[in-house]
Amino acid sequence: MFFRIIAQTRLTDACYSLRYSPHILNQLAIVSCENFGIRGRSTIQLINNHDQLTFNWSDALFDISFVETDPSLIISACGDGSINLWQLNNTNSLPLLSLREHQREVWCVHWSESRSNDTLLSTSADGTIKLWNFNSSPMVYKTLLGHESVVYEARWHPRQSGLIASVSADCSLRLFDIKQSSNIVNPRAHPTEILCLDWSKYDDHLLITGACDNRLRLWDIRMITNAITIFEGHEAAIRRIKFDPHRRDRLASTGYDGQLKLWNLNSTNIHTERICKDFIYGLDWNLFEQDKLAIGAWDRIVRLCEIISM
Image 1 (cartoon, rainbow, N blue to C red):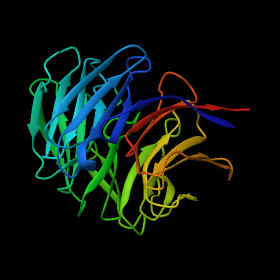
Image 2: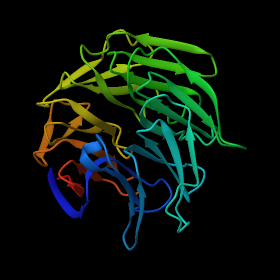
Image 3: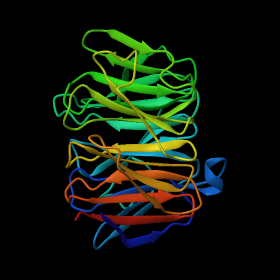
Image 4: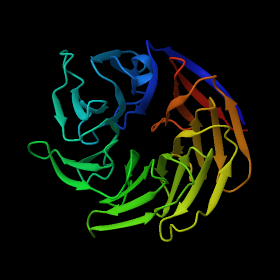
């Protein structure tokens, strides 16, 4: 396997999150924060092969999500407890909507990938997950409780409508089934804060978590009391993990050690790339082109990368 960086984009500030568009080939949304998100402004940049669009915001922005049902809209997670809706074909630099329901910072936003469920979720340092309905006037229609500390990330299941997995600083992994009104919890999924998770794109019952214990754990949601596999190799906390949307057996992870690791679920082989000396908060696979991914770090560089398999 060969790994190469095919392009780089320099940012004005530290990258906090990035996402590939599910609508437009090679369109990438990037969030960067002044002073590493502690205080100051933020920037949203949208880049693709030919164009670049920039929005500025006066507070920290920690995450971004494309709206699955409308290619002209994106959602951002804000440090003041709000979520912002931006219109990409609008030259106005202000958000189309700014909605505040959380009491503290919003860490994650994720629009449902199931077209039968036109709903956004947001997670917060206030310990809650809020579900937003945008069918008519935007509103919170449900608040999910249970976590006892910061909810760093939650993700809708890519195919099972109404199923959400979430992870928190309280060390727990939770599964919320909105349709069944159920809440299943592993209160000690990791011995430390859990920072990230992702669902398998091929196996409905598999998800992965990454934490401050420097380990990834693979779970079968039919029995989340014990992890199927524990992956070791990172030298610091794991901040992002992503299953490959084009391959059943591969996932990528990045973290505070400045490394990218590529894992194969069917073997013990690990491919490691030392990307930089800074935290890596941004990671996503290209949804249209195989073996391509984007990495965004606190060294203010977004790297577009390619994996060449032999």
